Each structure stands twice: as structure tokens, then as C-alpha cells.
Amino acid sequence: MQIRQLQIAHDALQDRLILRVSTQADEEFRVWLTRRFLRELWPHLARLLGQASEDDTPLPSEIDAIPAPSGLEQVFQDDQATYPLGSTPLLTSEIKCNSLADGSFHLTFREGRERSFELGLTPDLLQAFCAMLHAGAEQAHWDLALDHAASVAPSVVPHLRPTHLH
Image (tube, rainbow, N blue to C red; front, side, top):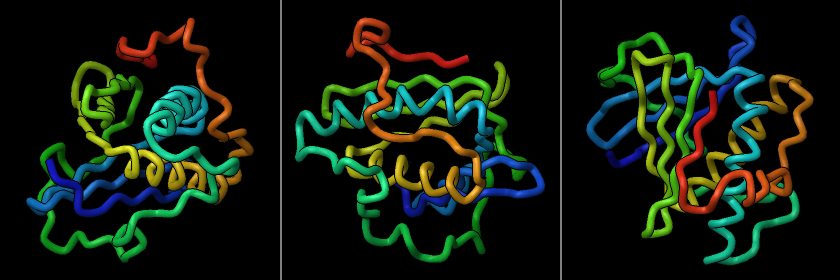
């Protein structure tokens, strides 16, 4: 799956963040992220960010300082999209986080045992994804401490084993 656009927006009525991913094949995947889920997910994303920075340049001290890759600030295009998971967003209750040998990352969002969505991210896209999550949580006024220093200790989550959140 080649990502064309990522968007994270706050839905005030649902009090959730919605992740929208559009692909080069004109597919759109929609995923709900709750405050509680983001709070539990963030340390694992921060650990992945730490892994990404080991091979690359050091991360900025503030997640807000991470620049978004070009093209991600454009208006989200969904005029001809198809929805492989349906138009109703997947309500994430579980995620699996993997670091791949090529330096990229693989996130599998699951809704119970029903629907799932796999998202592959390069280190740059992971940084942009985390910056978008941070901005979405700020917009939602969720008062979450989302910084890259909040990572899970390596003794709790080994470097090469998948991480599961429930």
C-alpha cells in the first residue's frame, strides 16, 4: 500500500481522533482513536521514534518541532475514494507495533477480532504521524503528556518483539 495522504482530525461530537489514510489506489481507510487508547499507545510510538532516531539524526526535544513531509498539509482528497473496510471508521481496541529489518515500522490496528488495518511507515512518516497525533490531542484538549521521552523501557518491551496493546 502506497500512502498518498494521512490526516488526523478531532471529531468533537465523538470526542475521538479520526485517522484517515488515502492510498495511491484511491482507497481510504478510517480509524477512530480514543483518548484512552492514545494514552496507552504513545509510549510504544515514542519507543519506535527512539529506534528511528538511533539510525538517523537525533529527534527534536519537542515533538511539535518535527516537520511534516511535503504533501501532508494539503486538503485531504476523498472525492473518488473506495472504502475497503467500509465507510464507518474502525474503532481501535488493539494495536500491534513492529520494527522491520529495513528500518521501517508496521502498525496493525484492530477492532476486537473483526476488522483490522495495517499501516507501514518509514521513519519520516512515523515522525509525521506522531506529530499529527500530538496536534490532534492538543486540538481535542485531552491534556496528555505526549513527548518522545515517554517511551516504554526496553526491559518491558524487547526491541525486536511485537508490541500488543489491549
